[in-house]
Length: 371
Image (cartoon, rainbow, N blue to C red; front, top):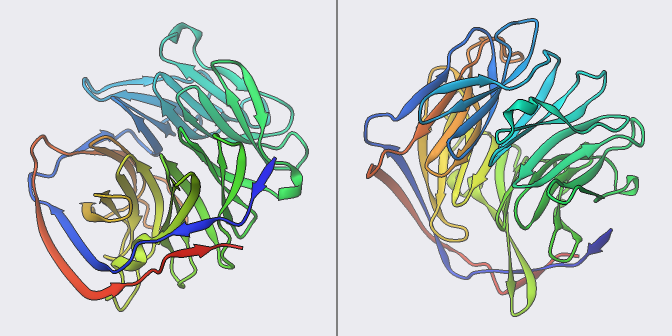
């Protein structure tokens, strides 16, 4: 395990802070994907497929698969035990499963449906929080005991497992994988790190004294929830190569949007796909779904996607679609009734724009070095 410190940030100069809020002007393109009894939640999406966790039978918990073009729904699990964090990439669905008395990683392969669901990782101790990108699987492993919680990588194409972290780094949580690396959280109060595939190094992403949690990664962007300002914001780290050296730029995504707001809202559940960042935001008194679409490495425009009366959480983006679940229970501490929804941008749809321009430039100097 390699660590690389310090790292330099290359910064842009004299950037005007412009914030645009887009509202969808066409007919609201939202599909009610699941309306079975009780809870359907923690959805994920890739291509034409949506997967979610489902409690419709009350006594059992299953994973369901939804085919968007024909609205076909398929139950893909054969055991009703407790499950968590379903993720889909291509023809594979993975999740954490408790059917054997501890947490294992299970898999369903759409190319071989006759195999049903079967274990991928079932060592002693718990294996939890899977994430998948193509044939690459990442998860948290506790085979070393209750106090051990390390990051593991599994190459499904070559059947090769690699341990990324050890107990000396503390406990790991919430891994997110892309083609370039794995973002993850360390420690109960949360610092964010990146394991880079290219040179097999672990880099500091954010080690601010306040709490950071729930990292999400796509391409060379990493996002997380951050409470350094007294509320929960979304921050981003963008990294790239500059004359052969690796540079990192930390960018406050939502704090810039809130500059002129007397009461700062909270944001949670960030997810990024390509240039589309989605998250939940409570600025209107309950949790709504927003899309921030990047137009370059750091700047973009904000669109309100759904502002239903119920709280809405867990957005996941893929292409021009966004999937999420609602919380219909009036008690904010529990979820007893929830459904899955999908927004799809109609072909040729336009947006109406309202905007504000803060003419004070943000001056960011030349280079910043973390130590």
